[in-house]
Image (spheres, helix red, strand yellow):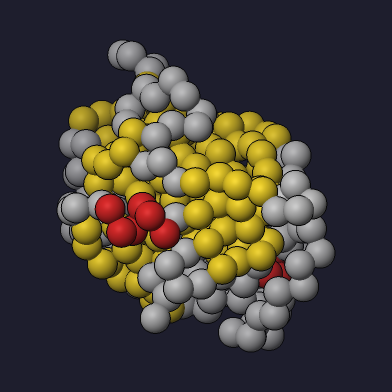
Length: 261
């Protein structure tokens, strides 16, 4: 999930109701609020993507002990690279809109947009309602009985929480699916993040373990390490291979980095 653009906002889920603005100015106050999270204006952003790479991004500290994550060398050394456009669209008049009556936004889960997630934002959380394959409703159709808070606001260092999406009579990769999607989230650190052409001075490192627990069959999980900044959203995302045991994994199935001109 990659998110980008900003506005104002107000639990369970309460529909976003404001005169949204695309102007967002970071205040660097030690917490990321919904009004500083870019999911109120549909738009696009470019991301640099590499797959199946070993990522050893450098971690240092400044004079006050603040972490500094450096991704410059990752961009320079990866051999297989692409530049992809990540879009945020309103649900609109789609075949799956009726399955998610309270969802507001559609965001692609992969660069080919084979599957998309359905989301909404209010002052308390970024909510996920499920996922589908837009071009083939028989490929993936996962509808959570109750929406899942993927990120809780205000987001702060030290936050930890777990939530579950219960699925009945769904479809996953063309096969019937019933079971649970479990999200375990930890905001482990706050620091600086350096890209080749830009430095972010106040970034939150968020680790998420996504578990798929079918009613019948074996469970599996995927880890994701993301770096979020006020008003820019997700700047870097690292996704692990299936059943990765290390939280600070370096063998990366996919890495995405915001491409800044």
